[in-house]
Length: 319
Image 1 (cartoon, rainbow, N blue to C red):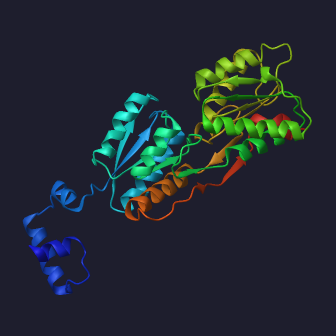
Image 2: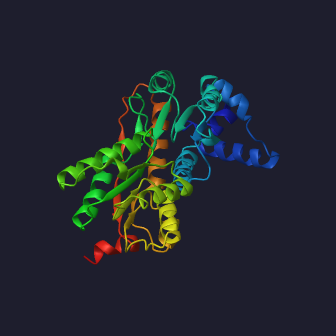
Image 3: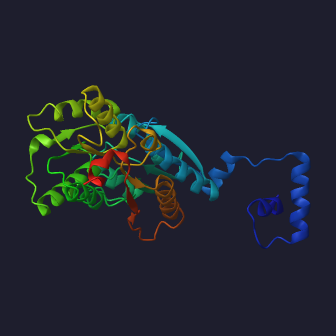
């Protein structure tokens, strides 16, 4: 039994001939290790809890794929759960970590307060990916949202736009960072900050359409709209057509995330591209380091991004 155990756990001390004999017998009898028994002995489940606010968001689905691939390569399985942005439901899932049903937890967003997230991270392996919570003390993987938004707004302003609207979720940390970048670029370009050009959205097509109707009903409608997600930008484009406006001509439209839809919209959407797969992979690798080397100091990881220019900003290209 001890020899079989050493073979199954890749003990380098096992002689080659012995290893081959054991593996041959395992194949003949169809033996499979008892995963529950192994987890009890090792105090490890080899499972990771991945929390998503929704399964319909293409960007987060990409993050999940990157995380899953990284976990699989290291011999871990993913348990994916959807919180529907419900803090009580999120707490129920976190109990899986507290009860040792999983070895670690990867948040892609959270409705929990920063103090609660910090307490979880202080006692258990946890990492935040993409949807950072301000003040929460747990390792984070994501892009510099403020700088990305600054570059988008500056590009629109340098292209001649002076009435630049932004659609964001004010309670969301990445959105607040993007607002900072937006304001910084406006100030740098000498453009007045008009509150009526800041509109709330919840990352859906519907909220983008509602925001668009509100913006283009103003006495002085915007000449550019920067949406905090490609889905909201798609809603803007759809509603502009319904209002008899030409997206890309009457007003530039810029999105965020570079999901597949961005390329096939009419007009195709200019957007901020951030690597979904890389973000998920890096976050999972960081979490596994916390699990396997709990005493090691963990750093936040910044992922690169780039601005993609397509037809929805053609009025700027033509200037």
